[in-house]
Length: 378
Ligand code: GMT
Image (cartoon, rainbow, N blue to C red; front, side):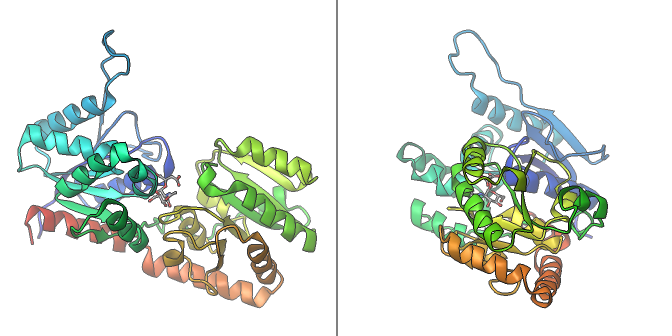
């Protein structure tokens, strides 16, 4: 039997898909008997209940008065090195290049080359930050000095190569969902709260950043509602574009048709009441929410941005249109909502595809293989 590993995981603990994926991966690895040490500034928000194989090490930042900006990155690098040595970790798996991969590089300088590092690229660390000339060389250094690098879509691998002129091997490891959590839930009474008259529910879940093109979400909904008045829009999450969206909704006179649910934890339950997920992003290396929706049997109407086409099969588990083409997105939504047979086929295809291609067992095993290969254990 291959030996169990001691793995340090660093991620953004309080926000975003990258933090969710890193935390869920840690939990699944712990269930498989590996010892997992989260090294983060706060407890990862999806960590949940106590597990004997999971440990949390808090990064504390020194706010000594000479520091104008408390040096979080240095505190993280030192903590990584300290935890690696004290807990005799086999490797560090860091999610997101900035600053985590750079901190892992520094930790390795402190501990020595026996420390192996795995970096997972999630998207904005490359598509946004690597465009910044002041960070480019640093990100390239971090990627090139990691022992293994993974990315969450083939599109992100290509973009990393192009933007940073990187030639090294990058493993493709798609994001995943835990099939015990993401499946079509029975939520009749919750659905009745938002759709008392059997209305169709369109949903968007995100951090409401400009890349999500929230005005396109509202525009698609307005077009669908015009053709099918028995529809509603549920907006889940919070972020800088939310106020603008509220104004747009009021201007269109749709305030009675839209519900703002704010940030939510149990998204599997909420997604299960939706008929369609809207994801018209400008950039999206993967689109975890489209996978969460797929696993709950909810097709996505979205854009062809980044890695979305690798996840959503156009014409089978959703429909994709060029970025900004809200007319085509609305037409696709109407087509799907008004054809019950087609809708049923899409729903079944969604559940199947999520289980076969993006299931937790499959992707966790891929990460384990990468760890063993990195450590030279076959
Ligand atoms: O979507 C965001 O803005 C958050 C960001 C993050 O860092 O968590 O998400 C990125 O990583 C997710 C997990 O791998 C991917 O599903 C998202 O597509 C990716 N976001 C972008 O590429 C914009």
